[in-house]
Amino acid sequence: MVSTDSSSGAYVSALELFSIGIGPSSSHTVGPMRAARDFRHRIEGRLPELDRLRVVLHGSLAATGRGHGTPDAVIAGLRGYGPSSVDPEAVHGEWARLEDGQILSVAGVEFTRDDIAFEPRSRGFAHPNALTFSGLRGEEELVGESYLSIGGGFITRVGAADVESSGSMTVVPGSFAHIAELLEIAGERSIAEVAWAYELAMHGHLRAEAGLDAIWEAMTRCVKRGLATDGILPGGLGVPRRAKAAWAELTRRGNAAASTEAILIYAMAVNEENAAGGRVVTAPTNGAAGVLPAVLYDAVAADGLSSADVRTFLLTATAIGSTIVKNASISGAEAGCQAEVGSACAMAAAGLTAVRGGTNEQIENAAEIALEHHLGLTCDPVGGLVQVPCIERNAVAASTAVTASRLALLGDGSHLVRLDTAIETMRQTGADMSSRYKETSLGGLAVNVVEC
Image (tube, rainbow, N blue to C red; front, side, top):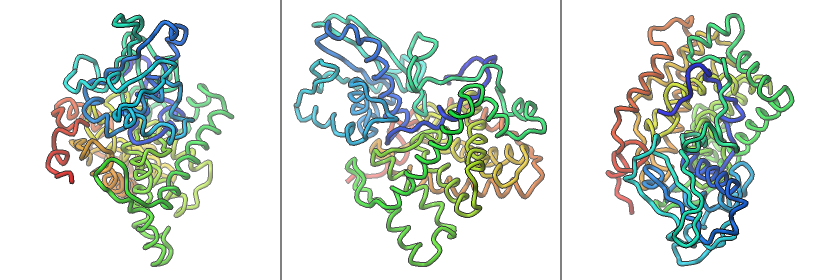
């Protein structure tokens, strides 16, 4: 598992953990785009010397990269685009043009289908999501770099302490390394107040507040787009978008937002947007992007949450997610879907408990319940697409987050299994899990569902 040294703490800024990007995958689309863009910047001065760029996708990136748009993302990154600002329409379809025999101009260099290679059995890196870039003149490599896409859109450059671009993970030195430490540091303060203090230290008041508000605005827009859009999702499975029709049916029944099914449809709306390659927010990944926004969107409608409440929700979720990143993983390629949807469910349950008046102990309890009941969940996307079972899985997890919060709020916060224990168990389970069930589409539903 990729993690930082324990002496540096665990807290990752909400502005990094919740990054605005494009679908369908944070680790297979957003991360590779950031890596390609970073490589482009590093070789900018040497581009006139090159007549060829070569990219090799390793491990899970190669196994399911086509379905996740990895080649498209790499081409966009090499052209200098970043996931937070690029028009999704400018990204998708480039690889298909190469497969049709076209030659593209990328960074001023001709780029062909053969310039992206897929090596799914390559496992020589510290993470299954690895990619290597080379700049060549003839057959001579003049420049080269390798990157790891470690989940949630975060990247690291092999052999470097960090990557000097958007997408590198910045951990607050001296912050908590485990949930037990977080609770001790908090004392009489809330978890959100502790997280806010870290955000202030990293960004200052104006940037931190504006960043949190922008994250929520992007999540809200994504939910609304998903509720208003129908059609067939790309990729060849013929999966229809269902959120719009389902929302129309709830509306026909009356008071749709107050129904118990609303939260399910919100989650589906987000993940259909993600599967279509639209603008989404990693929460903490794209594959699990629907859980947290659905829970928060539903709570805003049901409880009349203020902007301050929304920030409390996001900050509380960030503290929980940071600890999971530190001590386990949020990468499906590294630890299965327990790391993606399980983490999202825990973060959402924590945030909801916080805005409904829960104590720090009740918040920890809610997150533990949510994570515990996702342990062992595999990542087995049919066709290598973030569609089946991913879209419905987010809906179910959003409901589970609410259930976990309600259970925690019924008690006084005391519980047998600590969240730290559940996180460590997830790490161990992920390490033991066969690679067939870790975003490779080599096991589970991915091989037992017949693709038509």
